[in-house]
Picture (cartoon, rainbow, N blue to C red):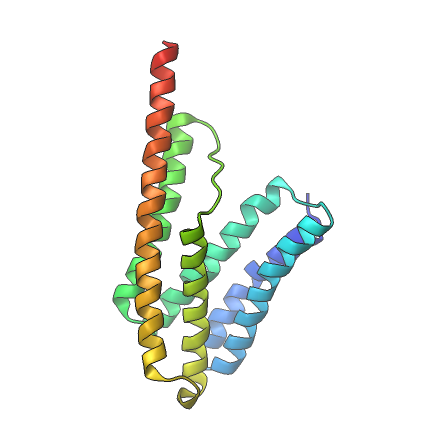
Length: 188
């Protein structure tokens, strides 16, 4: 069902190509504005869905997809223009690919949808990723607004939380698969 919160999420997805074009064109302030507005829509769609009791299965799929598309495309583009170190781009993108692959494996092996709540460290990782993108965009717009050590700190914090949450999601997925296999063995 396409309600207002889901429509807002779709706006975030549609904004991604505009953001990438602005970024690749060197229009860093405009890219930063689109990025901030996209971040606000992430907060707004969730809050609106909860306040109006309009949470839907479509929204539960669209919202994390929109988040992953925004984060991954931002990191890839910022890596291509050498604003973020390549090792960090590989780390962030690889973690998301591993997590998405894990969901796919679970779906095809167990043949049911995996419902997983993001962990605290997973949310913290996403926050650091988004803040890193925002600060790097601000630095690209005017390097005097951001001290170099802040970038270095954010790169390190983003790397640590990304690695930690990646291992946590892998561990949780393996435990789920093991428990599922154990319960199937007891039934047969």
